[in-house]
Length: 390
Image (cartoon, rainbow, N blue to C red; front, side, top):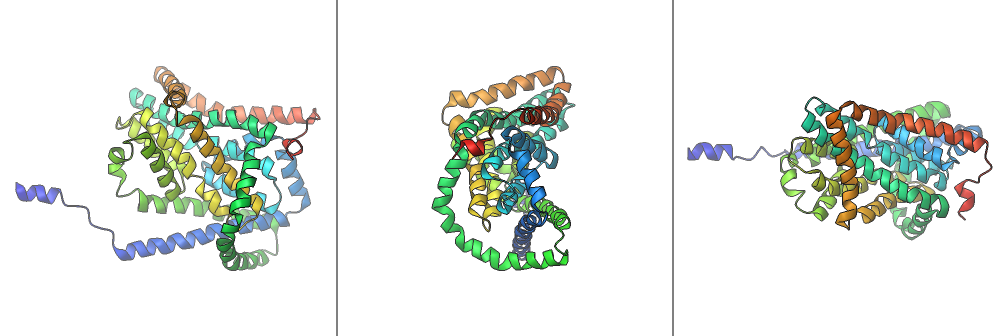
């Protein structure tokens, strides 16, 4: 009996050193391709010419349209990391101003929550499990929506995030000069070679850069998920959620490590559905995941301009300010939890509510509002926020 118990308690075999070396080399190679894809994208927008740039500026000059473009594009690709990296590249190319990009970043934050919401639909057969899973998934939605409702007007009228990000950028831009020089010495020459091979065709270059960006983001997420979460996944529910502050930090750290809030929040959905974690305890982790996901845009901005770093920092500030609004005071922290539980209870009565919610929030309402905003902007002489904030 004693021997069998010892055998049962044996730890799982350790990962070999050669495996770790191979994975680290793969990680560095994919990161290099990631930086290359962003460099190619910036070059593509420069080659596409003035007309394309003018169309982008025209489409995003209305902050409401910019917000919903960010939401829709992220909901479609199911990755805020991909969308924000694209935004950084477009800002770096000069095709998009910081003020126009900030609402798009806000929309991307809302759009990325669709993945965990879709994951919750996997429990639709079991009513109780679905109620819990759906509630914690839309908790992520409500947090980002509420933060946007608070910060969007402040950005629109006072340029809060764009001004703050510029101030922070002016203080830290010099620190990024070292990594920036290294990237320019390694990535830019290869980007120039690829550009010449496409005969400086902007459209081909844009398609190639988007493909490489999708590939690297997906591969990075899967690779880092294996390295970071693999062995610790079984112990997470025991050690990660002991205190709200610890849960917040774990959420930020793990999400930054695997470059995907969709992955970490989807994992939380499964824990809540299995009744191993309460919605209340999951919320700080979700807030942390929102902060952690900003690391990808920061990496993407390293070799770019001050404007590119500013929009990446605006993404960080949006999520950090959101945490400061909802995390410190337990009563305020309960507001999104209450809303999520209420809608979760509605889905238990009628599971079609979940499907209708996804269609309305992530697709139908944004499309309608983009149409209405576009129509209003065509019949209004209201100035865009770029002219308001100086």
